[in-house]
Image (cartoon, rainbow, N blue to C red; front, side, top):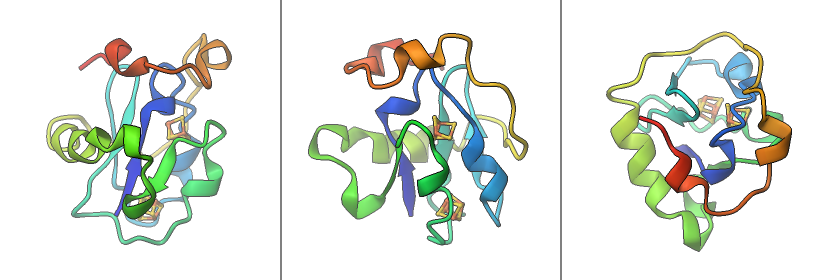
Length: 106
Ligand code: SF4
Ligand code: F3S
């Protein structure tokens, strides 16, 4: 499966959802997640993210391992998203900032 990591938080560019053949993205207030049981590992979304926030499960950086469980958990409760929308207003400013987990809204 593929996993969305920290750099999506407060950016949420949503380019990823447009290319997913199985529509397995789910949307929270300031973050997106991938449903691990629905993702077919096509890898199309990974290069689409302007924030480089998407990883194959086995390439998630050591300091973002908790995002694997977070994607699984939140994709069960958040609504599906299938169409691109505008990024969050301060996306450029937050792109690349560290420690964004505390900014996550559920
Ligand atoms: Fe969708 Fe493919 Fe990305 Fe999985 S790897 S979330 S199936 S685009
Ligand atoms: Fe997030 Fe990147 Fe998609 S910032 S919404 S994972 S395009």
